[in-house]
Each structure stands twice: as C-alpha cells, then as structure tokens.
Length: 470
Ligand code: ARG
Image (cartoon, rainbow, N blue to C red):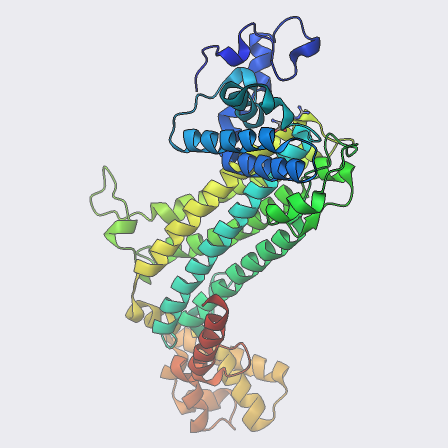
C-alpha cells in the first residue's frame, strides 16, 4: 500500500469529509482510523453497490443521465484497475469506499460527487459487507458439499469395513467405517443448513437507510435491493446501518463447522498413529521430522484442529465488539471485517485440506478388524441374546454378561473364544446358538434399526445422502 500523498489528499485534509477541518489527522490517528489495509477486499461488492445506487438515482431523476453514465463508466474503469493490480490505495482515504470515490473524482471530475447523494458510508459499508459475507457463505456451502461428497465416496467403499465403535474412547460396540464417516456427513450437512438458513435471513438490503434515518430524496430501495440480489430492503433504517447479525451468524456457523472439522482431524491424528494404525496418510498429506527419520506426521489434521481456536475466537471477538454499542453505527464496527475475513479464509483452507486427506487416506481394514473385536465389544450382543431367547430382563442379562466378560478376561480370551461350557457355568440355559452372536460381523449385521450400523442400512443412508449432496 502506498503511503505517498496523492492528489486526493494534498494538504492532509480529507477531500471527502474535510470541509470543516483546517488540518489533517495525526499520523497515529490516520493509522488507527484506516481500514484500507484490509477492507480493500470489499472492492467488487462496493462497486456493485455503487452501480446499483447510481442506476437507481438516474431512474428516479435524482441525478442526470449524463452524470450517471459518467459515474458508471468511471466505476467500471476502477473495477478494472483494482482487478489488474493497477490501483494505488491510500491510507489517508481511510477505507475502500473513499478510495474508490476519490479515484472516481480523479477520473470524471465533479460528477463523481453526485454518487453519494442519498447515501452514507454507513449504509454503503453495511451493503458491501453483507454482499461479501453472502459470497463467503456460498463458497463455504460449496466447500462443505465437496467434503461431504468425498466422505460419501469413502463411506461407500467401506460400508461393510468393521472397526471398533467407541464411547469414552473405550471399545464399545463394533461399527462399520462407512457408518462412522456418515456421522460426519450429517454434521457437515447441518453446518451447510445453518449457512443456508443464515443466508436467507441476511439477504436483505440496508442500502437507502443512508446515515441512519433514511433520506429526503425519492429513492427506490426495492430497485437497489433487486439489482443486488437481495430479497427485499431492510425495514428499519436504524437497524439497517447498525446490524451485524449477518456477520455473527456467519461466524457462529463457522465456529460450529470448525469444531466438527477439529473432531474429525483429531480422529485422523489418532487413527494414523502406530498405536491405532487404522489409516495411513499419503505422502501428499504427511510431513517428516527433521530428527526422527521414521516419522510421518499428520500436520494438516493437527493444523485444522489448531485453527479451530481462531475461528471460535473471531466469533467471540465480534460478539464483544457489538455487545455494548448503542444505536446506530459506531466506528467499533470497523473491527468486524478482519474477523470475518480470517474466519472465511481459515475455513476454506481447512475444508480443502480435510477433503484432500479424506480422498487420499489409505484405510487399513485388517487393523480396524483386529481392533473391532478387542475389549469384549460384542458383550451387548450376548446380553441382547439372553433377553431375546431366554426372556431374561435386560438388567439381569447385563449382569450375567458381565460375569462372562470377567471369565474371559481371567483366561485372556475374547468372548467368541469362550466355549459353551464356560458360558453355561454362568447361565446354564445358554445354548450353542448364543455363540453365533459373538462375532463382530454378526454384531454389526444385526444392527438393522433405523440409523444403525448394519451395512445395508449404511448403503441406504449413503444413497439418501447423495440425493442431498448431488
Ligand atoms: N470503514 C468504515 C467501516 O468499516 C466505513 C463506515 C464509516 N462510517 C463512518 N460514519 N465513519 O465501518
């Protein structure tokens, strides 16, 4: 960013609002005040908002068609200059809105001054930022769908691959790996739905609220709303310029999605360890150690897990910015943008890295299967058999099975390695048939209830999810 004074700020007094000022700001004042260092990312949205506003001013006869045409041509040229990297941003002009208007004045002269008729930077920034967040929501929704599709591909490959299911990170009951991945498809589906919902609520236009009270000019807020793809104008001018719920909802949705990514990242870290050995990350998603030649580190997963903090932090930070603000706009609100930009960038990067890892990770079926049978994971199946076949109340069946587990533990055997005699020593009515429910395959195949882990349920769930994700 250029610090050189330009013709737009010769005497240090801001040309756009300096009428009552004799001198320019202190260097430190200019520095704390300026947002151009980050809000230049709003340039395309700001120009779109200005174009819509200008076209409305022409249509309503508030400015002449001639001035309006000059403004529109100038705005196009500025868009081109910025896109091509040929625009000089000025800190003295504070933000993207005044940088663009200042440049417009250089390009077309006094007609530029008519663009701000019936508008304020307050409704201008609210409009530009809303448009940016709307785009960010759409990008994130697309990225989440990509991730879901990657998970569904792997879930389909492993609809019948056995693995241990955990509670308390202790072996609980066997499940399929496909079923496990589908849990994340559900979580990311809710994240997508939250963003869709937030988008619907935020898609209203603040433009035309002007500084805070509306305007005396005969503007058409419906026209600008429509031109910018908003469903309608916001109803209350005070709310329109002071509301940042759209940014908060975006950040809260990001924070929840980041938490889901973090949980999956944590599982990847566990699964890829030598102790679990359930997956191997390919070279493309592993890093080495500078001292331990044997190491393959899951850095991307760790970083996704680690970045969750900054996304949650962004949500918290903006909540704190907003919590004490009286109606309507206060400059505190300029602090909204960096949090949202950083969260959006972080989410896009994290989701893309997660999608890459999911697509490429190598699944170690044998290690998963071996682990699935550990920890007496089919004990519940024996208890269920006692209930079903011997009509024993579940609590009692639970107790009997506990004794069977104790015996197995004493012998260092798994449940399906126990002979019928040993089972009958605990409960004489147990028959050979009980032993057939003790394998992990039988256990998983039996869990056919809605939402259960039986492979046929998993395959049906994948088909249903694909209808949504495309
Ligand atoms: N850069 C400012 C922001 O991001 C634009 C709005 C400034 N409005 C004002 N009245 N100073 O919030």
